[in-house]
Length: 318
Image (cartoon, rainbow, N blue to C red; front, side):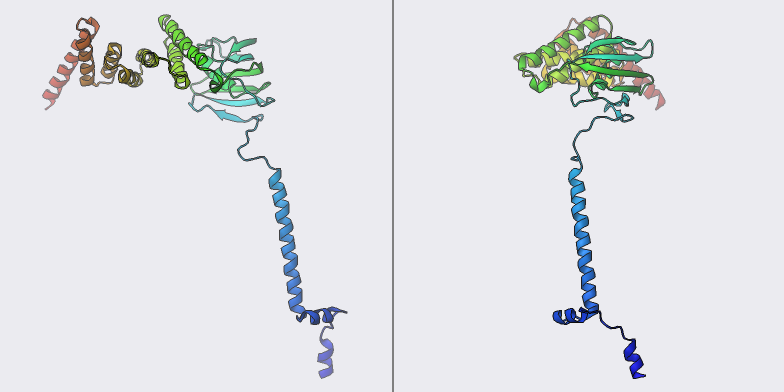
C-alpha cells in the first residue's frame, strides 16, 4: 500500500526541483509567482498600447470641420443649420467678406440677398430679416459647404458657399476703422427708419451698439451711444416691444438725464405696459425741460384720465 501511494505522486519535471530548491520555493508557489509576473507583463503591454492609442487621438477641444449631416443651432434660437455637403479648409467668412453664394428661399420672404442664382454678397450688407440669418449661417461655413437652414418661426432656406474674400476681425481693425463701422450702421439705420423699414433699422442700431463695445471711445462716445439707445427704443416701440424700449431709454438717460426724447419714449413704453404712474412721471419730466412740448402734454392728459378711470373702477369694486 505504501508503495502504491508513493507511486501516485507526480514526479517533478527535469530541472524543476533543482530550480525550486535554488530559490528555496515549493513548486506550487513558484508557479503562482510565474503567473503573477505574466499578468503584470500583460497589463503593462495593454497600458502601453492604450497610451499609444491615446496619443493618436486629436486634442478634445480641437475644432473639426462640420461633416455631412451635422446640425448646429443658432444661439439666439432663430434657426437650425443642417450640413448637406461638407466644406474644405479651416477659414470661414467674417463681417465684410464678399461671398460667392447660391441661395434658395421660399418666395416672398424678407430676403434682400439675390436668390436662386449665383451671386456675390457682402456679409453683413443685407437689411432683410432673413439676410441676418444668412449672415449668421455663413459665419459658420467653409468654402464648398452647402447647408439647409430651418427657421424656428417656419420656413427653410439652403445656401451654398463657393468662395469668399478675407476680412478683418474687430481686434485687427484700428480705431478709425471700428468707428467708421459704428457711424455707417447708425446712418444706415436712420435711412431705413425714415423709409419705414423699422425692423431693419432696429437691426442696424443694435449692430452699431455691438460694434461700439470694441471701438476706441472718441470725444463724442457718450453722445453717439445715447443716440443709438434712444433710436433703438423708437424702433422697439413701433415693433410693440415696450419692455425693450423702456430698457434702452433708461440706458440713454443714464448718460443724458435730461434727454426729452428718451423720457417721452419711456413714458409711452410704461403706458403700453400699464405702468401709468411711471408713464405720468416721465411725461412730467419732459414738460419740466420743455414746457411747450404739446405731444408730451397730450399724452400726459390721456394717461391721467386712464389713472382716474382705473381708480374709479377700483372704488366701485370696493
